[in-house]
Image 1: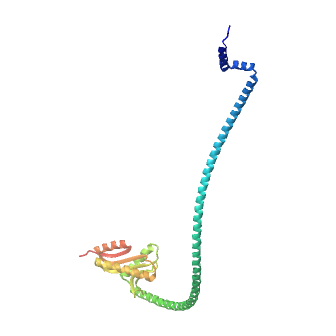
Image 2: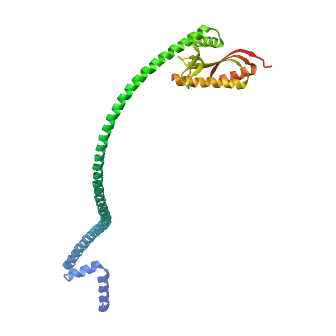
Image 3: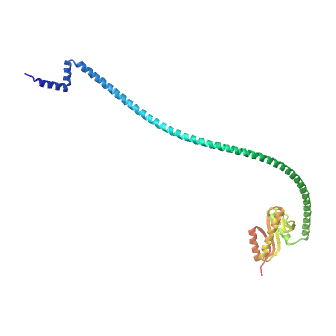
Length: 302
């Protein structure tokens, strides 16, 4: 059987290309097996090396990325620090400017304090002179005060003597009036005394007392402790007369308060005869003004 050599070559080449087992068998026959085995090991070693390198490069890339991030963060921080330093420099420049301004002001203030010290020295000299004058004036005032005190002592003795004489005169007049007896004033004084006694107040009510104030002021009814002031009249015929009597009572009250230095405890208005309309007016007025009203007889106006 004849074999086509060309066909055999093509078949052999095809098998070498497509059949690895055949290819290795042929290589072993021609002495290439050891070489191929070595190449296979080299390829495996190379693949491992390439894999290791790839992993190392991946790790390096990761580290470079981290380093880049750190550098970016550092750059950002450095930029922030640079900005802060720029602001700090501006602040320091502003502070320096302010310190220069403050120094200038301190220099001006120092000059002013020097001027003020000079003025205070001048003022101290003036005050020392004034103190010397005040001491002289105080000595003079002391002498005047001593003279005035002596004058007051003399005047107090004179007033005490005059008051004793006046008291004796008033008591004498009161005794004379009491000796005369009767009268609506004494009746009113007795009624007021009894009313006060019912309130638990003992009061020596006097009548027709003349006080040395505003010239001389005659008071129809008075008690000194507590202070009672009264106006007594026999007859009131009209509203106008009633208003005058109330006014006389208030005038007497003001005079007695000035004379005694006390506030009035009770106001008294006593009327022996009054018409019905006048009596009604007096009642309203007394209630409004806190006056004790004593009415004798009321009559009908004709």
